[in-house]
Image (cartoon, rainbow, N blue to C red; front, side, top):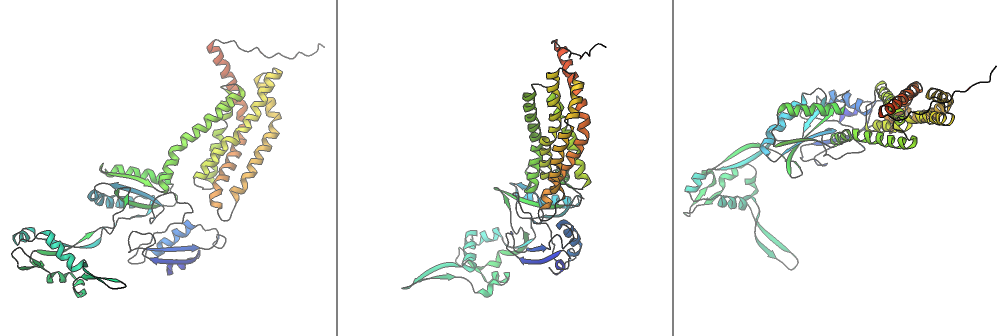
Length: 457
């Protein structure tokens, strides 16, 4: 705690040992409160954690794992790090063998740090080993030994005394002086079938070994949770791939099942559903535009503006060194609705001119580009300037909102610079493709637009 207080970004440090939701009492928890962001000159919590690790690694007899407190926790159990990987099995011996192996292998991965396990198998246990052949010759059964030990150390109730106001229990036990060490077992005697008393030490011996302090469960099966943090510059998706490849490389038996939990599991679910969500959004937009323009081709022209917006959003995230978070993905989905309005304003006007004035597609789209330039720029600048406060905002919680603004601003800038030139070209090519399809089906082509004839000179 004193080492943590010396950091310039730390305000207060509070700690306690045992309890606190932990599974064992040989652990402690330390809560570190940071100074306001302005007082620590914009240094993030992750940067403070990185510079505190070398200082805290020199503390003998204790290992401290640091993680930033999450405002929203997505399942999982309390652990030493932010992300969790859980293995479970119905075979406790196999789990005990493979969990340390997997832990050691994950600690060697360069993309992970603070790798630890909730499995603690080095607890001391004392076993009373019975020499069963000798006990059988003496006519002593394990049940008899059980009863004798319970009489001595189990606080057996042998009587109850009633008074007018209360009742009292009479408990039998050996003197507390014999509880202090295993040597007290030498003073215990067991009745044999022959009627004599046999010292317990004559057919038993005391043996020390190691055992698990606690066996955690996920559902009904024993489990071991390995928690880890990400190294600087490593994305969660990359770490997930490395852990999955490591599991295959180690060749874990079929009786052991591994899966991510908590935040990492939520990330996997969101990534798995992301292509389906984007495809559904594009399909819905295509259907609506197809009904609006009564065409199968021109909705593709409008949707052709979306790749430039996606590229712009990704470039903006890379330039600002911002991670592709769930909030950034929401911003990219919003771009689908914001960016396509440029092409809608141009194509809607071009189709109207082409059908009303019987102009050629080239003349229609050229006129649309000229007359719709101002409203396109006005609407784009309104959306772009509306996203700037999100992208440039500071203060508490700005880290959560900033990726949304960055993706919107970056996507709008790149799409605006490209779609003004690419949309007319794609419109003409799609029109030619539509005519080619009509010829292929043997359909009648539309009449050529009438040419204006000027007065004779």
